[in-house]
Amino acid sequence: MEIVVCVKPVPEAETRLRPAAGGATLDPEAVKFVLAGYDESAVEQALLLREAVPDTKVHVVAYGPAPRTEEVLRAALALGCDRATWVEAPAQTTGDPLEAARALAAAIAGAPHDLVLCGKQAGDDEAGLVPSALGELLGVPDFELVVDLRWRAADGRFTFERTGDAGAEQWECPTPVVIGLQQAWNDPRTAKLPNILKSRKAPIAKVTAALAADAPKSRPEKFELPPPRTGAKMIEYKTPEEAAAKLVKLLREEAKVFP
Amino acid sequence: MTDTVLVVAESRAGHLADATREAIGVARALAAGGAVEAVALGREGTALVNELAQLGVARTFLAADPAWDEVGASAAAVAVAAAADRSGASLVVVGGTSGGRDLVGRLAVRWNAAAATGVTAAERADGGLRVRRPIFGGRATETRRLEGGRGVLSLRPHAFPVPPDAPVPAHAEPLAVEVPPAWRAAKRTGVRAAGPSSGPGLTDAAIVVSGGRGVRAPENFALIEALAAALGAAVGASRAVTDAGWRPTSFQVGQTGRAVSPQLYIAVGISGAIQHLVGMVSSRVIVAINSDASAPIFKVADYGIVGDLFQIVPALTAEVRKARGLA
Image 1 (tube, each protein chain N blue to C red):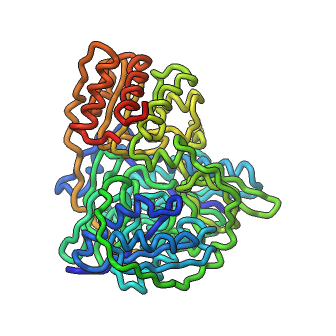
Image 2: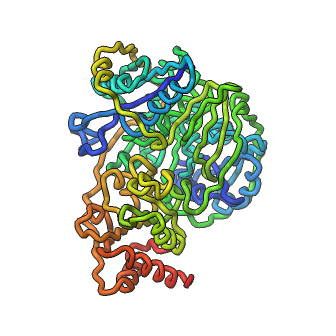
Image 3: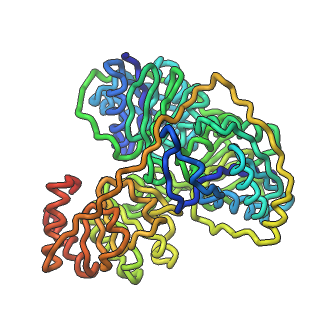
């Protein structure tokens, strides 16, 4: 089986965010970019499938600028992915997830792909547009919010569960398919030191994104941090009943969120 | 500028979903006097036509083939694109449901539009569309401009009010569009309905009550559940709770769990690690109940009670029941 995993460099969770000069985007200079969250779960899922299904290869693909995109691809190689493709973006991209989907699809279309795995959304912009856009661009079905993805060798179909609006849905489907994974249902492994060292010298195929100038797009205009919260209004009380009564009154009359 | 805006109509228990009502409100504002139309898929679509008209939807396209009920959420993009072409709309608005969000990327590619998801504000801006959306789990907000003649938006749940009625005569039009063969090969084999306290409820709920390490033992979670039941809220948990196996992972709110943005979030016995805050900080109003006055959760909360949750929570449950006439 040929598995493609799409990953994206995102700021480390504890990083302090600040706007770049001009105020339109996040300042990337102040940020450490990592392979994280949803993408880590997607890589883990690919490696679990490779362990379970004979003759499986895992190809990790990322779209983005230097140097952070190369770094997350090396992190994925250190975890055990077999090969990597870097679709290089210009330093100033629109940050439009549909631009990323088009760039990724062009790279994936020319490579074998029985399964394309993504996180359900990127940990930074949280758009969740890439999996279903990739499905359309590659001409295959896509499913999001997926957990417990397994391969059923007997009839060559995947089985999985996804979080639908009415509850947990069980599905089965043939290849090829795009899957957007729910995070945190597996426990991503950490890379071993010898593999980290090896990944530093591993070859990475590099292609330049061919982006159609006339594709509809969105552009960033402003990146804002919320005003710092001033801290909670603390409720003074003598008995738990008094605390409860005061809180309900505040929720009802001041915050106006009491049902 | 007036324009036609198309809304994707979704049903819950046979009625128009609140998320769709919110989408109609946005569509009415952005149509600026132009028509608001809708597309509904599958068996339940017909039942929605009158409720849609009550909210001002002038025409509803019905892709009534029951096969639409059996396919993945993203497949709906095929029917929505067909309806958008028939309608002549320049903008499609989808409510903040998981199914709605799944179709946006596919629809944008298929219909050649720009797109944004999880939108909390939208306005027309010099021939384009300007949207705001929270990013980084609510730690920042971005404003983006959608260019080109067409746009697709999905909304953040509860970010917009349900609009007042604006009745027009109901008008439905059949939309003959078939499920593409590639989708028919996939099969849904079962659905486990969500209880009031399970996963999807958590993301949709207007109120969430979450318990953390301070709850101390799995059986004590009954306190959290009782308060949630009194409020009609969903139950969530911090990672400490799901890691300890007190509640399944599907309850987890946070960076490695679900991001929620309800009207009201009540954090009980949760200290407020970054990993949890990322998943709930964009809630409209946050209440924290914790025995430790220096817990970081009080820095992001709007209202705080320092105290023993084993005394405060039962008192609060009783007060809520009394205030809602349930006692």
